[in-house]
Every structure is written in structure tokens, then in C-alpha cells.
Amino acid sequence: MHWVIPLTILIFQQALLVQSEKVIRLTPQVEAHLTFLRGLDKRDDIEIDFWRSPSYLFQAVDIEVSEKDLPTLSSILKDHGIDFEVQINDVQKLIEEELETVGARSGGWHSRYHNLEEIHSKLIEFSGRMAFVLSLGKSHEGRQMRAIKIKGRYRYNKPVFFIQCGIHAREWVSPATCMYMIDQLTQKYGRDQSVTALLDKMDFVILPVLNVDGYAYTWINPRDRGYRLWRKNRRYHRSYRCHGVDLNRNWGYGWGGTGASHRPCDTTFRGSTPFSEIETINVRNYLKGLEGKLKGFIDFHAYSQMWFIPWGYTSRRTTDHWEQMRVAKAASDALRRVHGTRFKYGSSASLLYPASGGSEDWTYGELGVTYSFSVELRDTGHHGFLLPADQIIPTGEETFEGLKALVREMRV
Image (cartoon, rainbow, N blue to C red; front, side):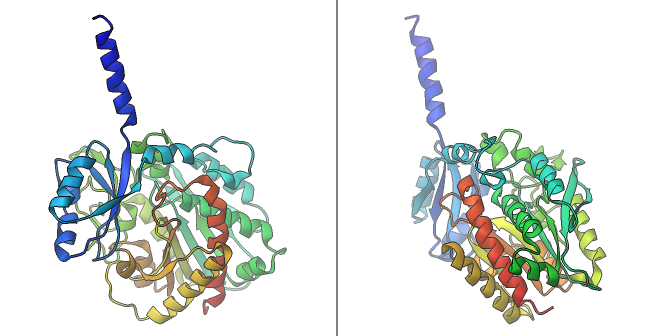
């Protein structure tokens, strides 16, 4: 009998190893489904994470759930008449596959994901005659928020286009795509007619990682989903014993409304006040300092393949709706011609879900930047936040073509 206990322990350990997180997809068909789903993450009997939150009827909802909790969730959904399918069968497997190329020497810089230090070091390599690195300030934990300004031919009062990436830490393809575009801009000016025209029309400032603390946290142990899938910044809420503010719910236009939580431990916590976070304050101050020169703005996210115009906090149309739709269509069409990737375009409140306190609403509503957008990159949910590294370059290629088309169409 001496071998029974060790064997039992071994079997138990193996059972733990095969436990996996899954992502299921469901589609609410009636209002009762939506009402129920909006409170699902508040239950005590299961732990879930919305990858795509409930928004409208017939709009897909993605939920991450452990294998342990899946039977309970399945029973609950069945009781409410909600069908689902498994979208990702093993989250951990995707995490491992995503990391296979990390540290590899072959394939070029853009063939794998990089940590914050590597990204900031690469920014310095890109700097030179036409580009220089600047800091927008320090984060909550004291990290520099480094950006790069890329300039073409000089002209007085030249317009500026600002691009920010990585506001949500787990969306790794966002910083990777922005680094790809920085590479294209700095290496091809004067050699590629389309890039030269782009930079002669506007200067670009690109912030590859806005949420530097959150992004650094995902790299502490990227094989652990608790680190890898972190979304918010790293402010500690002592009274609640949890961390983070959703920096894309913290901007001061339409703040505190639909799609933003007042609960500090929720993934969409809006913060205690508009611009409560130093990270959003730093970007706000820089953009306001540009005064009338800021003419374009994009906030890159993942996932869903959508090109958003304002508003995010309401489905009401802006006064510049048709002009914004015109250039968003041009970007989406150009993007599709590269690899056939199809993007929807329109307001995030109508296409995905309402989200108040977003950056593009603030740049449009407060600063009057007509060409303000947010973009959800690849894919549509097959990999979700865990896009394989071999899709970085195709994502960068198509997104850059979309950007070039958008800027060509801008009336500035």
C-alpha cells in the first residue's frame, strides 16, 4: 500500500495539468439573454473573463472559462436558453505556440513578439536624421513612456498624426504592428513614393506601448495566463486588494457611462475620475501641447478586424460622420487588397459595443480632431488576444497600407 498515495498524488497532478482555459462564443438572441449576460461576471459560483463583452442582440460574445467551471457555465446557459460553441479549446496551448519564436535569432525582428525593453531599444535604433525618440512622461510604476517622432519634408505648421498602441496590455499584436509601421516609415522615406508622400504630408508621432506597466507585467511570466492576459495598468487598490484601471475607459469625454465599470477589480474599471491615471494624463498633455497641428489620431487594439470612427460612448452619429466613414472605408478597402483580410468600419458603439471614456472620443470631442479612429486588428476570434507570431508581419503589411490610404484621403 505504500505506492498508493504517491500514485494518487501523481494522478491528481496530471489531472491539474490537463485542466485548461477555454473560450466559448455565444450570440444573444433576445433581450433577456443580454440582461443575463451583463451580470454573468458578477456571479460567485464561476470565474469568467469576457474577451468580447455582451453588447447588442445577434452580436457575438466571447467568454474565457476554465475547464473546471465549464460544466457549471454550460448548465447556467442552458437554463437561460443560450447556445454556445467552443471557440478556443485550449488557451494555454495558444500561449505556448505564441511564445515559440521568443528569443529566436532567425526570421528578423518582426517575426516574434518583444518585451518592453526590446521595444524601447529598437526605437533608439530607428532614430536618426528624420526620427527621434521622446518620452511623454513616466508611468505609475516609474517607466518611461517612449514614443518616436518621424518627419518628412519641413513645412511651416505641418500637420501631425499621432498613433498609440498597447493601451491594453494583453493585446500584443498592437505594439508589434506599430513597430512594423515605424520600421517602414523610417527605412523607406525617399525610396518608396507612397511612404515619402505620407511623411511629406504629415509628421507622425507613434507611441508603441502606452500601458508600459501592464505590458511589462504580461512579460514577467508570459506562459502564465494570469500575467499574459492582463489588461489594465498596475495601480493597486488597497481597499479591494486588486490592481488596475482600464486606460481606455479613463479619458475625459463621455467618461463613466456605458461599457465602463465603477468596480475597481473589474477589467473595464474606469478609474476614480476622468484622467485619474498618469498614463492618460501624459498622453493628454502631449496632444494638447500640439494645439492645432494634431490632425489625425489612431488607437490600435486587438481583436475583431474593425476600423472604428467616433463615437464609442453612444450610437449617436457625429457631425462629421460621413467624412469619417469615407476615409475609414478607404483604409479598410486598401487593407483588404493586401491579404484579403476583411474589416468592418463604423462606430464602435454600433459595431462592437458601447465603451465610454475612450481615447478617440476625447480627441474628437475635446480637441476637434475629425480624423480620430480606433482600430481592432486581427483576428475575429480564432486566436483572439493570442495571435501567432507568424501573423505579425502580414498584420503590419495590411495595416500600413490602410494607414497610407487613410492619410491620402484626409482633407488637411
